[in-house]
Amino acid sequence: MTKPNLQIALDQNTLADAARIAHLAGPVVDIVEVGTILELQAGQQAISVMREMFPDKIIASDTKCADAGSTVAQNSKDAGADLMTVIDSATIATMKSALSVLSGIQVELYSAWNWDLAKEWKKIGIEQVIYHQSRDALLAGEVWGKKDLDIVKGFIELGFKVSVTGGLNVDTIKLFEGVPVYTFIAGRAITGQDNPKAAAEAFQEEIKKYW
Image 1 (cartoon, rainbow, N blue to C red):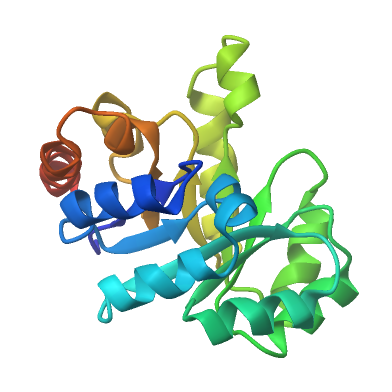
Image 2: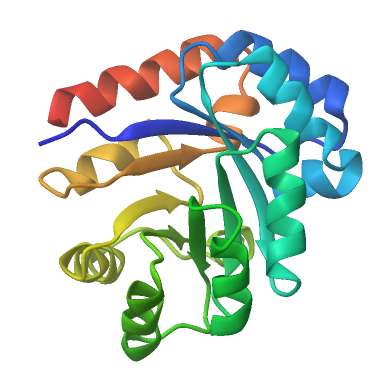
């Protein structure tokens, strides 16, 4: 089974803070994500800076695009992104529009999806989804469990590459043993630590235990 990627989600309020953390942890991870909060604060420049810092890494643009798919995708692509997120409530037309510009479109799952829609995404050429436990849900006391694993497995069975995110920490990784997850996306469990490099290394070591 292929080892899952480790992705760092940079959701700092300033590009300077994000660049400082990326300098430490970026070399350890497989994918560097310009998170939604950072992109809202710093714009496309944040993508350009990460591309300059990590010319050989996969760069993700977490736009959560809901409309103007080709325009947003073109902006992300021009800035240096390989991947871009669209929100699950976006129309099929928006997803097709984004795909016409950037092949690495990822649908981020919140509450607007169903299995019939997922099959439609597959038909138009979407290859990746992100199963997401929202920050608000986690703050409300939700935890990772069987229902999450069943959904992840369901998308894998449909042929999607599935990334998982939302309050992940090192102890969460073992819950996915035997599941061919494409990417683990960690935010504060890396970026919020005193030593982001060591935190990223701990994630990579834990992933290697099971894959």
